[in-house]
Each structure stands twice: as C-alpha cells, then as structure tokens.
Length: 324
Image (cartoon, rainbow, N blue to C red):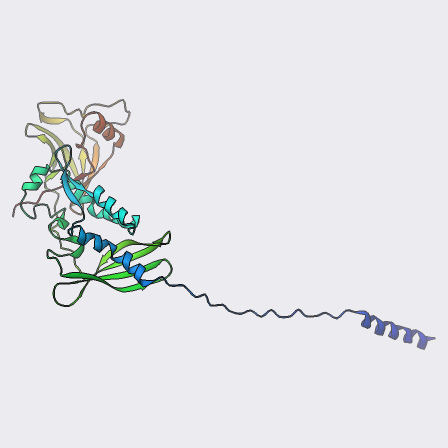
C-alpha cells in the first residue's frame, strides 16, 4: 500500500512538470547607434551676410552716423538714421544695434550739451574725450582709406553660429581687421558683433572731480568742500558736499544763492517726500570720465523737470577738455 501511494505521488509530479509552459525569452532588440550628419550652409551665403556691413560702410563713404542740428540748435548725434539703414540691410541683428546704442550713448549725451555752431567751429580733437570715434574711420580703425577690403576664413561653427574675418590692404599684404560674429535668426545669417583683431583702443586721460562739469543747461563748479550750480553768469546756487572718496561725494540740500530769480527748488509739487535743507539730496560718482548723479528724491526731480525746468538735475554731467 505504501508503495502504491509513493508511486502515485511520483507520477503526479512528473505530469505536473510537463503541463508547465516554457518561458520564452524575448528576442534581444538590436540597437544601432545613428550618427546625425549636420548639414552645412553654403559658405558663400555666410560670407555675403558677413561682409554686408562693410559693403554698406564703404558705399556710405566710411561713415556710420552723422551729427546734425536739432530743433533747439544743439548738436545731435543722429543714430536713428544710422540704425534705420542697418535694419534695411536685412543682415544686421538687433543684438548688434543694441551694442551700437551703448557704444554711441556717451558721445550722444555729451554732444547734446553743445550748440551745433560751437561743434562746427571747434578745433580738431576738441571732443575726443567723449567722442574719440569722431576723428577717424571707426570701423577700419584708421584715418586712411584702404585700397581694398575682403572677407576670408568663413567658418560655420554649428547650425546657429558662424564667423567671417575681414581683411584690408593698403598696397602691401592683406592685414586682418575684424572678426564678424553671425547668428542664424529666422533662417537668415545676421551680424551680432564685430570684434577687432589686434587693434588697441586709444587711452583717454582720466578726469578728476574738481573743476567744471556741464549738462545742456547748468554748470557744476566742484571744489573741495562745496558745489555751485551755475544757471548763467548772474545766477548761482551753492550746496555743501560730503566727500565719500576721490570719485564720490554727496550733495547736501541748501537754499543758499546769489541769483536774481527763484529757480523753483522750494516747490513741493504736493509731494510728501521732498528735499530737506541740511540732508543729502544726491550722490555723484565719477565713472569713465562721466559724472553720474543718483538722486535720493527721484519723484521730486521728475516733477521739477516737468513743471519748472528740464536739463538741470540730469543723470550725466561732462567735463570739457582742459587747456594744457
């Protein structure tokens, strides 16, 4: 009996194993590495866009902006026309135009303090402290016109970036001038920057705080312990200063004057926060030869400018070239 039971158990195990479904291992998927081939643009197209600025510059008489007379008879650096012409080329990025706005900003603000007739009558290099580009052809870094110019070394870095080198020739060997930086914008190669090759910028003598600083309306006479706002020869307002460093000071509000008219600085314009006699009114900082003002009462300055007199409390003041 025991033998019969043991035999039945063995048979049950054997038949149970046969009924099990064999597990089939899935076929291994063969993964192949694919190499993406980047399609390069036609170098001639990149070169045409890259040299387009210099094509325009030479055809425009090697000038970029002009200086004209505005409605107030002041000198105006006409960048609006310059930028309009650049945009018309279709190959100039707004990134480049923004860099040009920054480059020409200081010169434009400085010229706005001058009457156009004074600008016209000025001797050479009178304004080169703030407008050094005025006295030579900026984009070729020279006062002489080359015999020819050409594009070389067209290089597409990737699908969005490329460079082109510009060379000039003055009768001898071709000389590297600048590297054109291009980016593809909406499927068009556009210039975003022009970087000069082996060209050093002329060094400008650094100015110091003491002396006369001007905007379009007033002259600031800065001394060791005081500041005077000169509206004209018969009107002066005097303010104490608190020296912070060799390039910084605070202007302390005052009503001390020698003037035949009231300049309106006592007005409050209905504001609660107004200048207080004996308290700091602004901080002046000398930065890159420009005296910059940071006003502690910006809303009052805005109202004064709108309702009393513009171009008195401005952001920038300039110091004319001093006689040797």
